[in-house]
Image (cartoon, rainbow, N blue to C red):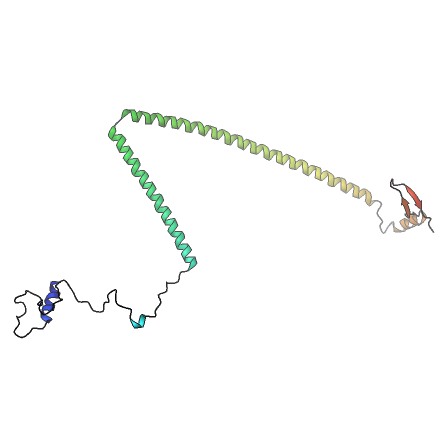
Length: 221
């Protein structure tokens, strides 16, 4: 600032008969020459106040927000959410550590034998309870494992019985087919079966009643 004031003093005009620079008013322009001048006011070029209208070249310009990619916005929002969750977890962890340290310092400062004894008693009870619950949990898991093995064995036995019954049924069907195959018509017995049918004709043109008895039959021609 003093360097700028000295430069302004050197550049200001001097009126005829007026005091020389640096005489009468100190190192700066005379207040009589510059009524609105003040050592604290620095002239600025190319600046506009808030009340000035916009330039003619920018009067019709409409400011549009920059385009935002929806996928990128979702990724950024997800990353901000994860960042906030991580910071919240870290703050909670640090707060818990600070509170634990303060609690320990307070307990150590008080040096209360009763509190320490109660703390030891509660910790011993906690250890016993944890051991009891662990034993119950191990027993429950053992019973569940045994029950699961029993169910698997029963399922395997049932599957084996089903497979055995299925094989027996299929074997019976095969034997029945083999027995029925004896009466099939083949190239070897074709002539004999034709002669048998001609020698023993059968009439299927008959009527039956509700009980299945034949009530009417037509004679073969």
